[in-house]
Length: 260
Image 1 (spheres, rainbow, N blue to C red):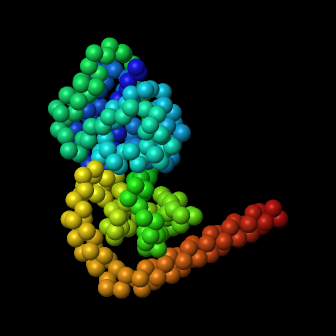
Image 2: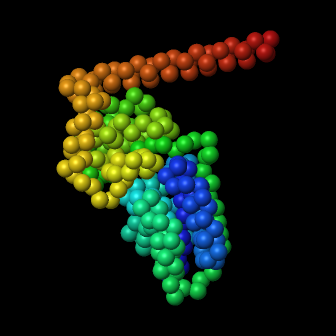
Image 3: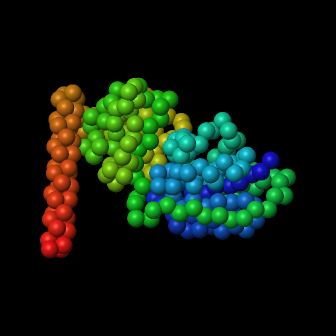
């Protein structure tokens, strides 16, 4: 059975640069099949097909990255069916490097397969901060779509979908903080917990946190606050469309003048 390790050399500062370099160096020294993804979040948006193809080349996968729930959602975003492969995870947010090395050695125990080292690079200019929806928890209330000012979400049929991940404001997890189902995950959220994709969720603690966040962000009249944000979002969209139309008009006039 073919095996391969995938290491997310995370574009966020979830672990130190020294730790990331040490993990990469260790994996290269093993000589086993190993792929280093510069940023799994970014590649799951900008390089979906390439990311998917790398995973589908093997039968058994070990992923060294952040919380497994967040990683599973990122892979689903690439169109990877978890039932088609055997997946194992090592969470570098919770495990030390020595624990990661032991897990890697155990994964390849008894396997003499030697393989090449490959790299997959994402767009370094984009911080790849965006939400993922855990549909096993989502109740399709649409609150996130009503709240977001940047057109990240859309209500499509009986689902809420992330349609504009690059529209998300960097380091803004507010929609995740007010999600009553803790269904919204930001893999690069530095404070860990359910919003970062932790697999173990303290439901009572999350409910208490959500109520505090809702009171802070939306105030006492939640529905009025959401309607106001929806109106503001529409205003932003109209303003953006007008600016684009003016820019296109100016470009057309400039081209017309240049032909005279």
